[in-house]
Image (tube, rainbow, N blue to C red; front, side, top):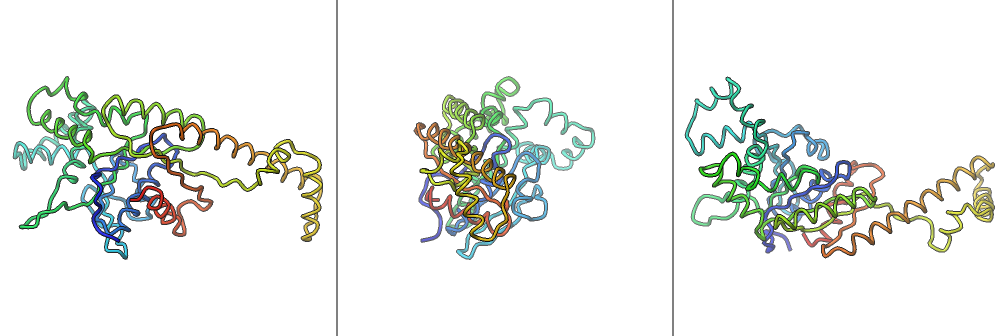
Length: 331
């Protein structure tokens, strides 16, 4: 069954340590939601054009643009949120500055405002996303313009500060429209309509950073939707042989040489030794993955697992990740 979801979640914030594939996961999540017939806004706030690279589309701009149409009728609309553009829109909305806003930009006031106070900059960035979440259609049957918004957010090292907009603006805006907007954004972020998904690799440092981020988000009353273990490699060495391969047992080398010879491969010490070393490395990596997976399983948070893509996100494999997320998370 397709169509708008009954889930109360409207905003999916995706974060993760750099290099874990959070932009890829955010894109796959948007595709998974669109496959259910939903109209989804996929937004980024760091200006890296990571979404355009993953989806293989032209660079995103500050205007919303249709990126993907799903056979179910769902859509993915893309947006790159820029602090400067967001500030000009903010000034027009609250102060009706019109052309005066362009004058401020020419004299450098906009650049000054968006760099001197990082907290205000983040309010502007999230404010654009906040507006998209709350936007409704015109007419008698008013409904959300977007069934869901997926935000490719800053990495875990900065996510707490980025989302804690109320505290970040308290020193520079105790009253007025900026503070009021920060309060409204905070209410959305702390409501059941928002969840934060943390992307990690099954490696010690990314997992530890994920655990730290979960603690930080909890202290800020922000909900964690799931932890997504990305790039997980499937064990190819049977468990009953893993110990012997890891120890590079001579009997394994003999069996490997016999098997290669049987299929017409000319063998030698270098070839057999290299393959055996690769096997040992693979067994060790599988062991480390299992250890870190066990750490995540102790969390009171759903853990999703996405496979390693040998060819990157080419050849439709991004859709494979979307299908995995849909199946595991019930998107």
